[in-house]
Image 1: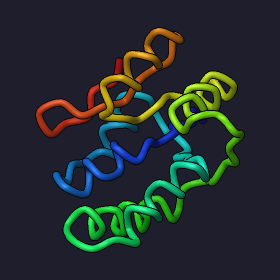
Image 2: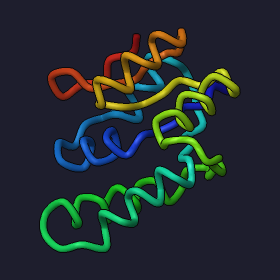
Image 3: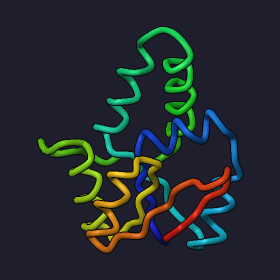
Length: 122
């Protein structure tokens, strides 16, 4: 079963504009195991501890990620950890961060992103 490692940007985006993201990923990749790195969870927790719409969005994103398999992080930047974990596991990477997506494609990783409210895999 293919793993998909989720970035905070993707999780926040699917909260802000609900989609059939899970079904779309299954359609594009087959059955998959959703994974969140603990440093990504930490980013969301930090955002969720604040006030306002962004904090509420982060709290819902954390709820969504609650059922994901957690994986530890090293000492590199969050983006570098995501790229490294995806490459090591042969996993796809779910993000709407254009810089992270570009880096992932440069590392020959599959990228799951959103375009026009639908999941795009490339």
